[in-house]
Length: 407
Ligand SMILES: *Cc1c(COP(=O)(O)O)cnc(C)c1O
Image (cartoon, rainbow, N blue to C red; front, side, top):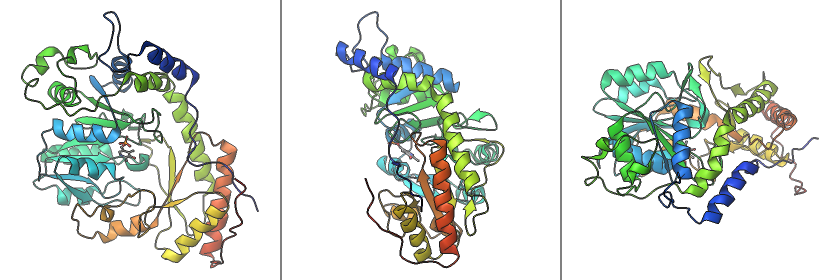
């Protein structure tokens, strides 16, 4: 019986060019973004400029984390304590956490079988709400034309959580470029790796001037190259609180070579995704996620559904795959393991049950697809999942082979 021996949490090494750039920053000792010599441009400022150019955004700000980026976007929009903010019922904890961090109240919108936000549920819950924090969770992108039509008609401002969609697009337009602000993460498990880090893009000068000041620019915002002109700061500079969350030059130096390499990496991710997807075709009991033609996704993980399966059977699949080295996560587990991803785990935000969404959440199985896996690894992983899902579906719930792993 074949067994997979790779690690689902092992990312690729930081590229040599990035290591060299990081060494130069460390040798200079000037890690703080505003600690520059007169003729020097900070790595953080260069990263912002390059990310703005890559995405086509007018402005970009580099910050300490993706979660910080989301909270900063809410603050820049003036979201008030007690205000209700729409967001996805299927997302990760930093998203409702960002809303809670400004004292606002998440209002959860349901998920479809395509793993995207349910636009009918969104329309039903939109009354009296000013902001939607849209999470492109696990890289699944909803019909952005339809979503923006719905939100524009109601005067709802959209913040995009692009933690899983760096480089991805809907109908040729990049995620992060549909809403008023796009927020990205450069935490280790995302598309670029600086350990921790975040990026915000926007076209609106007032929103971005607020974000820059909020991030802790002091009166040094003039050193930003992908920021609005000084006039945009005039009325804000003394009234906007400093909530420090800057990115440092070390992280920026590590990210710039990765940004240059992003298109190549995106192709590699999707090659791996397509191999797993093809390997799971027509597996009894398993529902693959349909990817619309307009969705230019960038996969860094893989999801499938075990719709309407009994919990014991899902447990059996997870255990049997785990015993063969394939680490699956059951997002729908009644007790969250490792991290939370469903609305009823976040009990600080009250929510009414959503039966249609609960049915989907109950069946979502998730798997990371790091670039350290070869295409052959992905084919093997798919064979193992296929065999174990089929076995359990056909009634074999015998105990998995739990022989200790060699590693
Ligand atoms: C990782 C992540 C974030 C936030 O990222 P951090 O940089 O870890 O704060 C936001 N949304 C989603 C969906 C994420 O997976």
